Length: 358
Image 1 (cartoon, rainbow, N blue to C red):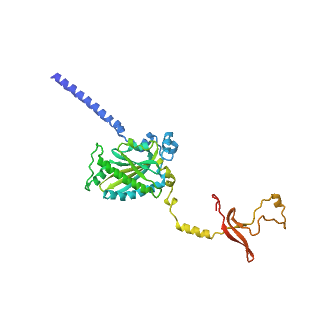
Image 2: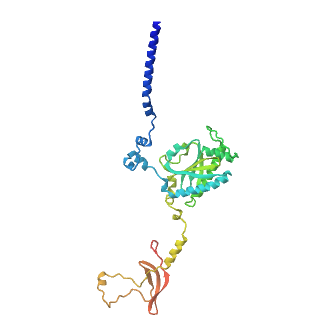
């Protein structure tokens, strides 16, 4: 019995020591757990990544960050491009309604500038890439249709019922029917893009081929800058995204036109201003000099001229005289007299050489 009592006492002491250790561990555990669960705020994240905030950001910006920032190109340098794409949205809304016989709403999700290589790496697959050639500019562009829009167009063109989502079967290649229907869609979009550029510059975007692998749709160097337009096409409960990419090299032939702030800088007439300018020109007074003869004399002879000296003209009586405005000859005429005044009757207009201002 004594042995059993000693074992019970030993077990009780051992249990008490284990409880004390567990209590000590439990008391020490919350501190590291709280540190592990702590979330960094935005300022700490920016500090770790090396991005400064506030007015002193430019002064603290590293050399690598400045090089990256200087390489970015903003599409806002071509303000007329926004007007062209707004016109494209209006045209596509009408043509896609006729194409699908459904209610279609087209909107711009954004216009950004980026490198061609970065865009190819960011294309969400599966997708179809239509390669188009701008014939007058002798360069290329891309029209990218995502999988959601592909299945929506196929569903609506093949008679799918409204109110049901398009069936998607991922992991298989696109069929010939799907490729044909998407090719027709890309052709409609390129026709609208041609019409959108028409008021600015005549250009024809011709469809060349359809690719499903971005590596086969390389139309520019990976480091070249491009303008990307993201369009959203909604057909009630169906739809998807369509992206149009134009390299800056493609837009170079019309760069001067795209730099305009408004369409009137290129064409268009202001009849009110033209009428006002014409009326003011008719009331403008100008001085005309009648030149009888021109002679070259030494400066000493001119300085020695006195009152009463005579200068013999080198023209015969009745010879035509020339009328000039400043140094510009305008007319030739005949000298005469009207009442007590000398008069000149204009006989013909003097033909001016090219490059001579009127």
